Length: 215
Image 1 (cartoon, rainbow, N blue to C red):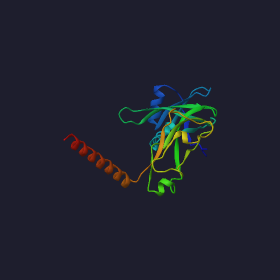
Image 2: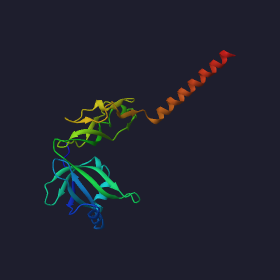
Image 3: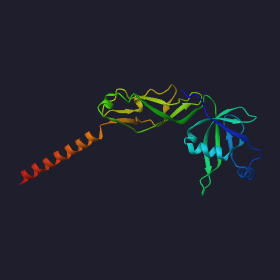
Image 4: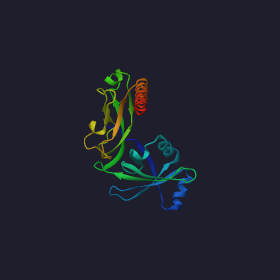
């Protein structure tokens, strides 16, 4: 399970409306609002540089955050929207939703592939090709897995591992209902090229025999 939920530090914002939002931006802040969770909406603002750094790091909207606002109790939130300037593509406003520990939420969870080195396919020169490095799961806010693990120690060349082959953490469920592929063990490029050449040669010979029969 995840060891720590990252902090998102914000400040309470006095005043609402477009005027207050413009003032926040002039002060180097990005205005936002926190809603849901059975409490009144809370107007906040986050330092522009701090938010931009987190956005550039990726997965901002897929991360559960521990929101810290001075004078308020910490609360778990997830970002529901980030509005951006249509010209500069920079954040101008964000919406955060409070979550209870029992709330269900969709998050992208990293996939870790273990046991590749030394597997039967690896010993034969095979290469593990990953199709998905993260999977969208529906999880409980108070019990979010840090990652899901795929055991590749028995994979042979040509084997494929799908989501049904993985034991998901208790309470977690894949958002996509079909049995999608996570990775496959492919043959070495040299063997694959040789196999393609053999197929071409066989096709040519067959065509020559057909021409002879017609003549």
